[in-house]
Image 1 (spheres, rainbow, N blue to C red):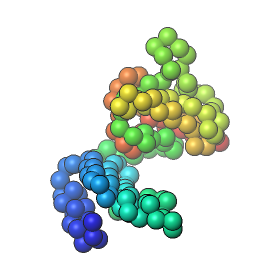
Image 2 (image 1 turned 180 degrees about the vertical axis):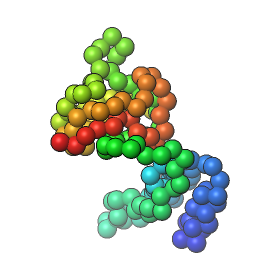
Image 3 (image 1 turned 90 degrees about the horizontal axis):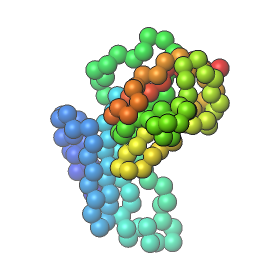
Image 4 (image 1 turned 135 degrees about the vertical axis):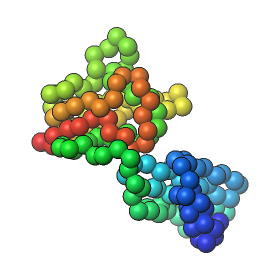
Length: 155
């Protein structure tokens, strides 16, 4: 896909309320996801380039300007947001102890919840040492990309 076609596609997507677009063919794959914080466009190199010895191994990304958010950001504290669309779970099973509770201090890399998407359970880890101030989502509720899951205080 040429740059002018990609720009036209991005313009068409941003003028609608579509939050996710994916196109996949034999030569390339394009994924456009819109969230509260930014739009991320990923485009894989055509298959012919992937077989060449000097192939580009990373997926180039174009970051568009932030989308207008309908929900205001929390008044205080940092947030840990959902990296994907799925279902939020506070514990590994219904009878298990939750990964994190309000008031608990969690270390960087510690699992704080699960987000299930397409039958896969994704562990969401704390990106920094912090104290959980508020849990923004009820257990087993759907979440969107970029939606705040926790309000935290960095330590």
